[in-house]
Image (cartoon, rainbow, N blue to C red):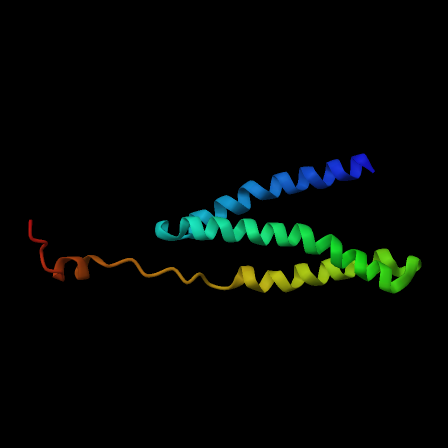
Length: 108
């Protein structure tokens, strides 16, 4: 059991940093705190609900089909998450040089 937990912990450790860096890099600076805490909330929910749903699927299908049902549930959740990653980002457009030149000068 210990080696399985070690492998799972190693995988979660390898996943955490790059995901956090990817999300924080894509977020506007004024939303960094909100985005960071949302990532942590999603990670915590995944770590909590994932095993709970797998255990529920295992319990509902009996001892013979439990592992298959749990893996099928995890694979389905992963497949549903892929389209969310493919959505285009909704970052605000950066002001162009033309609009910056047209803006009135600030008064001191």
